[in-house]
Image (cartoon, rainbow, N blue to C red; front, side):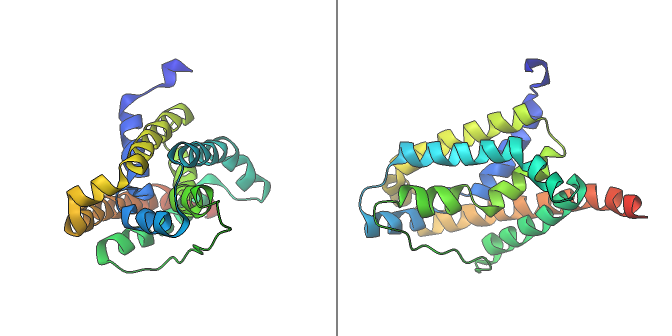
Length: 199
């Protein structure tokens, strides 16, 4: 397994997931959830998010195969999801609407762990990049992102004060552009094989 570890793949997967999870851009939302529900639990939130992503990493392909979808088709579909997520970040619009209402006392899990951190975008991305990178490298990238998520959840208010509204907005736009480029690359990489296969 360890011979499959590739620092370049880890770095690429880390950046992709970091942009999709967008934990920095989610700070205002995290603060609002904390204000409404009281104390959050960073360790619990991070652990649940990690487990969801790892399960989808290793079982996601089996699930899509069961329902008769090939990897290229899923990767192309994933590129569209990433494209619209990127548009949200760059243009400051809302295309995806999540239900933020949850039973009292469960905010660390719903909606924070799922769907804000380990949501549809993250899971689609994991399956999509699995078509290009080794699972061990993606798993390491997920773990590294969860370390950042944990730190951000602990230091949310300090980071918000340090960056300010403008700083968070700039970061969202920067990672939005990166994500947009990733979506285009993912589409072009898998659309051609898919068309050749169908042909």
